[in-house]
Length: 221
Image (tube, rainbow, N blue to C red; front, side, top):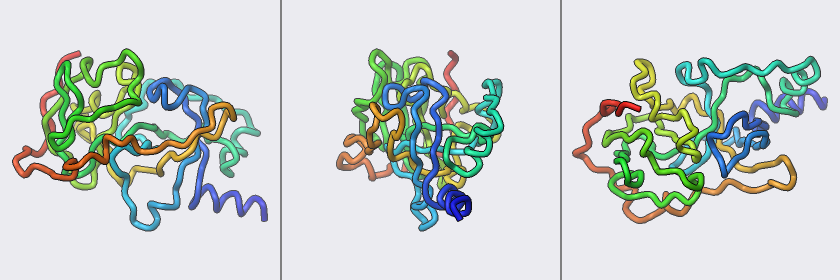
């Protein structure tokens, strides 16, 4: 009964994931365990701007990353959801723009969504918004997401996959596993993961009709 219950919880309600990299610092640290809400998408809700989401690798974004080697106990616990699974190819980033949004970031400037500049207090101290990889403006296709890490200069996010023939840097909504809602471990880092206020600013839902679809040329590193 306990095994069945654990599997049901993992499949439909909530699942633990481990943070393997520094790409979401300081919001998330390497080794943090986050709890991901998998229930809400079952009711048709889609990811919103500013949410931290876990998603399946949309197109070899993890190619070349070292794969962990779990022992037998870790594999069993990961399978039933009592600890993060090492076999799942998942990433965690913040949603910056959703389908229909126009998004851009010029060198030396902030990220803009539908013409509204984002004030991003969660960006890693000392990082720029996008100076290492400016982009846009372009329109996010329906059913897709534009995602970025909070540690911008350490994150292989949507910006770095704009030339991918399959994804063009966008993450399909259908690849989203769920929203990360709580840092559950270690206990001294327990915290919720709310949406920053900047994503709720007036006018951000006004989507310009003049934005050209597709992806702008990638800027050389």
